[in-house]
Image: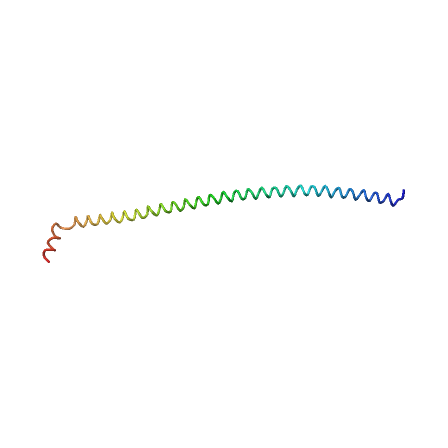
Length: 111
């Protein structure tokens, strides 16, 4: 056999081994890439799910704060009106008690 042919065959065998190594590395890299892609998709879906939940909670809290603010405003206005009427009645009552009897009629008649 010609030494050139045996050298050529050994080079071809080495090249085939190298190609097999590349194929196995490629398959491994492809599997890793697929796993990373699946993991990223799971993370993104979980993130979207949590963002949706957070948004719902924020909207619920905003609604509750607006509801409580409205209730507080109503209570404040009711308290202010009640105090105004109460103190007005108190002043009117004290003024009525402090006024001498018949003095109103006397001042009108004298004019």
